[in-house]
Length: 318
Ligand SMILES: C[S@@+](CC[C@H](N)C(=O)[O-])C[C@H]1O[C@@H](n2cnc3c(N)ncnc32)[C@H](O)[C@@H]1O
Image: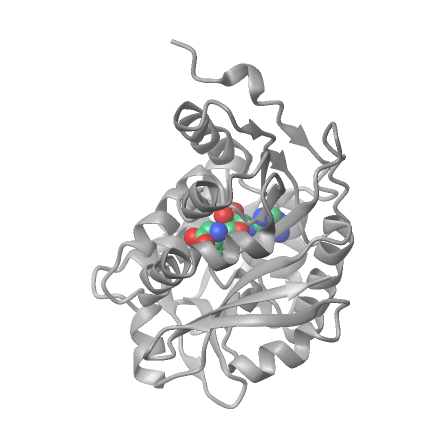
């Protein structure tokens, strides 16, 4: 069966550091930390997809509804025949709305989770046989060099899922500047989660079924799988409070007892109650996000939100 595989020329860019080196560097620090980009191996990406289905996780269904409701307007801003470049593309589910509405010439999904990207791109290729698909495995915290396609179509960026919230404001601005450069004059559609009732935010990252806890602990299971470390995930608790003063969910793995873990031959000690910071998820107001984006080379233009003002979609022009 032709699944369009001939069209899938995955571009792999150097990651610049190994998981082992980054993990050890973060765990030697005080306080300990692990960068959230390491959540995403195949298992991590699949668990994130399960989070998106949770009743508490309003983000995915609200953003998807916004995309569907405003698809024609967004398509007009992106322009027909563009190359849609999606940053942190994940499951590739949301982009289908834009592929239908905007009729792009090409779609370039970029993600750090390379094996998972390969899987989901194959499924998309089968459904869109006429679309030029060019998956890119890359780390967007590093400079991104996405080669131009034949005919050099205008680029339109797509950055959904409020992934921008995983960065502190200075790093978020640096990321938007890298995207501005990568888009070469094209606009960017960004999904941004909004500040709201802390109880609602807390529930979204502390779901009853424990899927977010599983996602958090996958960091340690990933290390066991890939590096042969001996983390006991039951020895750590998922902890995700909302820090209202900073306007962000903070995610930690907290050691339940005194324990040590050996990673690549190095022993790391954990005290009882010691936290390992694994993720932030910053929340914005519509105005605070527009102000920040305006300092990155983009001009904030249209913005869409839902009646409850849970989530926002921003069109930034270059
Ligand atoms: C919060 S999920 C969002 C997924 C999807 N875009 C959505 O809206 O549901 C973040 C996505 O960004 C990817 N990602 C995280 N850090 C990254 C990095 N440094 N470079 C490239 N992709 C990254 C993850 O693999 C994951 O697919």
